[in-house]
Image 1 (tube, rainbow, N blue to C red):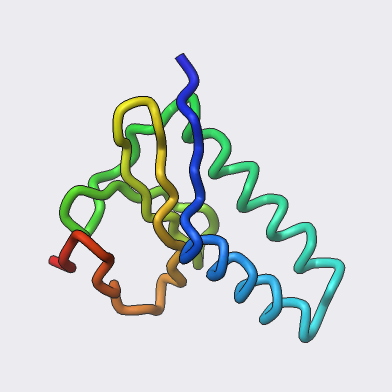
Image 2 (image 1 turned 90 degrees about the horizontal axis):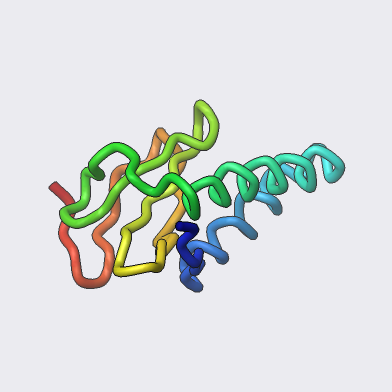
Amino acid sequence: MARKLRWTRRALRRLDEIAAYIAQDNPTRATSFVRELREKVDLLAEHPLGKSGRIYGTRELVLHRHYIAVYRVKGDEVQILTLLHTAQRVPPLPGGSAS
């Protein structure tokens, strides 16, 4: 059974930031890269049980060697909480704490 995907504002903002950063050098690649990230996130609707996250109550999916999606499964919904660059420290999320 496919679950519903819901992107939080924070995750969508991060996606926009990633696109803007890449677009500074290559606007075409920014568009295709965001499309690739979204396609990988879309797979969570069918297969949401990824690796346990570093933030309690979350899971993580490696989207690219430098980007990770942080998400949680609640009932029939997969909530995309944020996207992280692998060089970032894990920030606290509302309702959770970094481990």
